[in-house]
Structure formats: structure tokens, C-alpha cells
Length: 302
Ligand SMILES: [Zn+2]
Image (cartoon, rainbow, N blue to C red; front, side, top):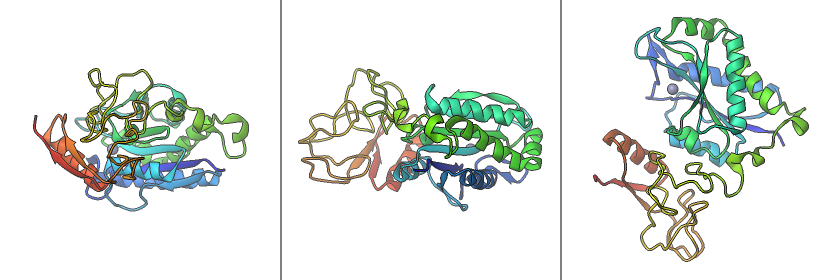
């Protein structure tokens, strides 16, 4: 079966992303995504897109689209921006945590982009980004140069097809093409990200690791189970499975990931109390994210 790669053109709709002299990140990311998709399809991959038009999606929605598709890899394309024009230039690829096929792929993509003229900044660990934290498959976010760097834009525009090809080459070097995959690819399901009972669809928690808050990814104090928003048991619930955060048999809540009833459950959908946010802006974004996924959400100021 062909490996499925979900490509995400960063931003979209009213979210322009970064802008520079009339140039909008959302347009650059969509153009690059479509070019990369064509190359990967020609190499035999099954390619899916979070968006193919200029539409807005929350970062959480982008992750959900990937999860619902069952894609093997998630690649989000962005352009970087600095505090002032031409402050920085170069490429950077972001991953949730170190290790695994995603780190190898990130390094290969950076190397390929360096070969066509970009400065290579680094592979950066970013546990705070929803598209990396909420995706259930190895996920990368490629910052294909700075949109406010004239040097990077010259490469992006004058060598556009090479930029797309470099990213494709980094992917193919890491996992092989469909023809070579049987002996060169590391099957996705043995990667740490996807091993049963390792990591977690909500926040990629590791066994033995302190529970993390999906809001800010900080370890929760001494708590081994709880609801996905704050790690506390839900009303009427006895406990949650510490390995996957699903309600245990006999409780009354639905599955927070898909609203389906859990064994012994009496309801599907449920409300979410938003706590632990660091700004009202963040809380409002969380509310939009939750509502987009069919939940009711309220903010409680602590
Ligand atoms: Zn961006």
C-alpha cells in the first residue's frame, strides 16, 4: 500500500500568515504545497492536502484532518518571518520532540534546501505547535526561508521548482520511494510516535513521563490520569487509562477524540472547561478549536 503523505499549506483564508511588501505567506505555502504534491505523486506516493484553496483552518483542524485520513506522514509548509526585514534568512524545520523518522527527515530536508542555496538554520524542537502536538503520525513543519528576506525570496521565486524538489528529495531519502520501500523504509508503525501505548494522540506523552497538559504541554504535578484538557477526572468519572487517557469502563463520558461512546458510557459529546491558559487570546483560540470539533467550551478565569 502506498505511503500516504498529508501536505499542509500553512495558514489560509483570513489568516494570511506573515506578510512582506504585499506578499502573503498563505499564498507561498499553497503554491509550494501543490508543487511538492505533484512531485511526490509522480514518485508513487499517495498525497493528500489539508487545503487546496484559500480557506481558513485552525491548526487543530489541520491536525484532525491528518488524523482522520490515516496519513503516514504530515508535512506542513510555512515561511518564516523576523522582527524586521532582512534580519534573518535560512531554512528551519520544526518537530515536536527529538528522535524518530521525523528528525531524520527534517535533517534531510534542511540539507537538500541548503544544497540549493538556502542557509541551513536548524531542526528546532517545538512542543507548543498544535499541528505537531496533535498529529498522530510523524509530523514536520518546514519553514522554507524567510518571507521578509529578499535573499530567501529570490531563491523561492527563481528556483521555485528546485525548492519543491529539495523537500521531496529529503522525504524520499528518508523513507524511500514506493519501489524501494520494502527494504529501505522504516515502517511507520515501529516508530516511537506510533507504538501502541507509547506517546498519545493528544500530546505524545511517553511511558513513565509525567502527564502533560495539552494546553501548554507542561508536565502536570503528580497526576497520572485525567481529562484531556486539564488531566482531572471528568464529572462522574472514576479514572482514566493513564496510557491513552481514555475513560475507563464504567464511566459516563464519551471518547474525547471522536465523541463515540465508551464502554458503559451514556453520552457522546461533552463540554470542556478551559483552564490553565496563559492569555485570553490563547483561551479564545482554544474555544474556537473546541467548537470547530463539536464541543461546547467555556472559559473559567482562575
Ligand atoms: Zn507560518
